[in-house]
Amino acid sequence: MSTPSAQPSSSEPALFGPALFGPGDRPAVIGHRGSSWVAPQNTLAAFEAACRAGVDAIELDLQLTSDQVVVVIHDDEVDATTDGTGPVAGFTAAELGALDAGSWFAPAFAGARVPLWPQVLDLVAAHPQVGLLIELKGDWTPAQTRLALDPLLAAGLGPRSIGQSFSRTSVAAIREVAPGLRRGLLVEDAADDLLEACAALGVLTCNPSGLMLQADPRLVARLHAAGLAVMVWTLDEDWMWRQTVDLGVDAIISNRPDRLAGWLAGRLTATAGIA
Image (tube, rainbow, N blue to C red; front, side):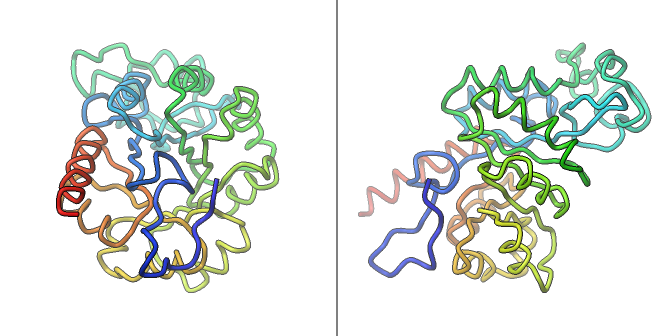
């Protein structure tokens, strides 16, 4: 996999997918917590829907139960996406697995469960065209990080995965446990030491929010000039996609990856027709 270079010259095309996921002729399409517009987020149903929608990668969130089992859920508490209540870290894996993680979304998904990490790895292994963008929620120690990364690497999915976190501590733990795994730093504000932190952590990609790019459209160019790819989150409307594609982002994370994939295909076709 190549890494982004400084800004391409006027005779060179914009750099997209080769540093991340996808064919490389457009920004990569990443399903946020799966295809969470059509199925309950971070469930096997959402991940399968994303794979069938033709995403380049699925984004998901990892947390640990009280008995140190890796599970896939975003919020620190289970209240919003299950029929339970309380912090994820207060449940054993068996207790968490007994919760209904689908009825809140729609009756058709009643009985969906919070996935165990190995279940998701099995699903992704069955879709060889799909990558993984893995977020560690909060601060993880190296020992905890190994619980997540050892199964990933054993499944042979390391080469098509990127580990990321808002926590610099967790990104450093990824580097210590699996130095060959590609890494990303999630950000929601442009800290003064952002470029220095990215360099120190050895990340491939710096992933800002869409709001950050609206406030500072030149951020993409600065990150590219520093040798970093840019995966923007979480954009669900075509005007947002148009704006960020024009800025040269390398991937778009969306709750509506099926629509994003279609929009990008249409844009490519229109561009080819103009050329």
